[in-house]
Amino acid sequence: MEEISTDILVIGSGLSGIVSAFEAEKSGLSVSLVGKFTIGMGTNTSMANGAFTVVNSRFSKEDHLKATLESGKGLNALHLVEALVENGPHAMEVFREYGVPLVEWGMGYAVARPENSSQLPGILLMKSLVERLKGHSIRLLPGLVIFDLVVEEGEIRGAFGFFRDGKPCLIRSTAVILAAGGAGAIYRRNDNQRSILGDGYALALRAGLSLFDLEFVQFYPLVLAEPRLSTFIFLPPYPKEMRLFDEKGEDLLKKLNFRVDLNRAVVTQRDRFSIALCEASQRGDVYVDLTRVPEKKWEYYPLNFLKKSKFPFRERSFLVSPAVHFLMGGVEIDERGRTALPGLFAAGEVVWGVHGANRLGGNALTECVVFGTAGGRSAAEYARLKESGHGAPNLFSDSSKKRWERKANAYVKKSRGMFDPTRDLLKDLKDIAWRYAGPIRGEESLREGLDRLGSMEKRIERVYPATLKDLFKKRDLENVALLLKAILKGSLLRRESRGSFFRKDFPDQDDPNWLRNTCYRLERGELQITHQPPKR
Ligand SMILES: Cc1cc2nc3c(=O)[nH]c(=O)nc-3n(C[C@H](O)[C@H](O)[C@H](O)COP(=O)(O)OP(=O)(O)OC[C@H]3O[C@@H](n4cnc5c(N)ncnc54)[C@H](O)[C@@H]3O)c2cc1C
Image (cartoon, rainbow, N blue to C red; front, side, top):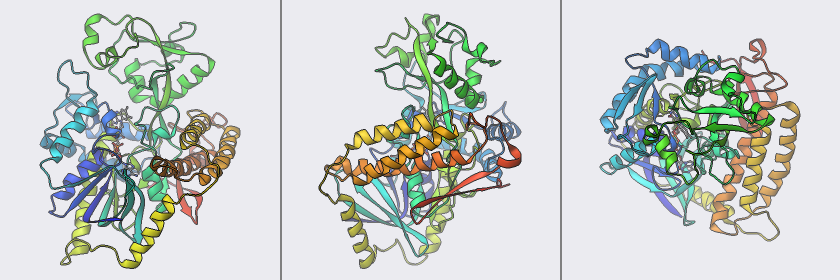
């Protein structure tokens, strides 16, 4: 087993991970940065539209606070929203310092793109961050998949995982920053990277942390749904000639009573718009038409990106549907990025609190920078204090090493018997997620989803890693099943509708009974769910 020692370990190389690594490195302590694949790639950040919601010349602190709280429908953690708004402008300065060009947009700043570039803004962003890593002393650990956090005597001691070549790895680290992103790809219809399967939530739950509000899943209204084409999100700005219509050719924005244009409906009314479109697509197909867009507009993003596809977007209308975009729930942190577990810090989509019942467009990237900076700084302070005079942490004790060697063997242990192919099982889990925990939920279907998941869990248990690929796939299956169970159970308990969360049997927001955050814990392997008033 490979052993590594570092002062600060960052799990995840998306925006929040890289920002926290840069910040922690300023302390002069040793920092290691892990990614499931090549550093920076396979991240949701690389898919992003590059919009940051933050104070600018036309959007004040009051506007930012108000819009975020309105979107969150009473479930935001106020102290975190205040920290986001207050520290947002500094986050933009951090970016300028990194050399990422930004331009002002309605509610903040966006990554500036060279004229006529058809590259996703997220790719441009990640490329400049990864390029900048070259001049730094941060140790990069690409292709390392973390399976467990190491917790001893009530504090974090590091993490355990496998490299893609199957070699197990035990990392001793005084402080750990969890920046492992969200979980959108646990759903059949989603616009996330395929590997974003909720590892961070599962790592935190198994380490004994409480997670909050996992039932709040954000759906993006307009995602390509043409069979045989990969799901592709239609990001604003949309040209005014773009039309959204149903099978009868009727304009859906008007029919569904949205009194704003498509751009505003997607950015500011994402939840209501997704639910309405999901209901509309249950009655018949929903289409987007771009054929009336004048030739010169196809030279610019995002249309120049579509132009590269073999699909004739300029000549015919095409099917769209809502799809999973973002998870509002996650790990609780304070303003300084600290979790309840000493030595563990967290940042980015894996974190709960800022968004409440629905995320305001553009707040996720700002959150990554604000809390990535805070987490990196706090992790360095913690490590320095813990190690004062002792230097970098020693490797693990012999008994501890033996325990992790036994665990590594258990993960790769082969057994005889029949088992389902891991790819089929993952597909089944994604189907359950979409069908029973999708945009429109109800008691009967949630119970059915839980029953189906129960029998899936037994099939997952029987899987053994016949190949190296199966070793990673089995962990994916366990993580997805755990998170999905939490979402289904939490959704069953919440008997109201709020923000992105819609129960057709309880269609109204019910403040007297449900102005409450949901708390999920894993106790002796069983999920425990409780509710508590929002933190003010
Ligand atoms: C299509 C799309 C467009 C978007 N556009 C915007 C936008 O314009 N503005 C906005 O504010 N938000 C946007 N978002 C949301 C935003 O991009 C994400 O919330 C944000 O980028 C998440 O960053 P992150 O650092 O938390 O995680 P990610 O960027 O997803 O990175 C996660 C990292 O964790 C690693 N990881 C995960 N599990 C493990 C493990 N077990 N072991 C080791 N490493 C692990 C992954 O390999 C990866 O490196 C968009 C999202 C999507 C999908």
